[in-house]
Image (tube, rainbow, N blue to C red; front, side):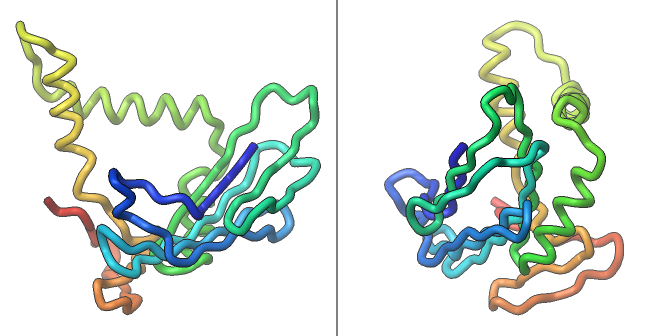
Length: 173
């Protein structure tokens, strides 16, 4: 299984990682990347753990890790958290959002949330898949980018703390 933080996403290569790294702290994968493009010098931290122990981990190139598992293992789940603030925020987000969870449970919970959101209106006639795809797109932004403890990084690169119950959003358009 390969995990990489160096490759960018964005048509035409407009979002580029200018700095990135992956490391292991016991069984926890820690990652970092600074990207520029959509937003200049945006930091993203990663904390991830597998549901099953890996046998070995190698870094064939910077920002890319290859994990080997037992041959008889049929399924592995990766539990991950990200943060725009720091590695501790990524870890806390992962732990809070996935503690005690199994993949099927998380998938079921996500399905219920999406069914509720998309079921708010009923459509008759026309290509429903096109309509519901576009309706789905109205829900994927803005993105909540504060950590589970209310910390976030503002546009000037300063870490801030929100009052309890408040959230910070990005991609408002």
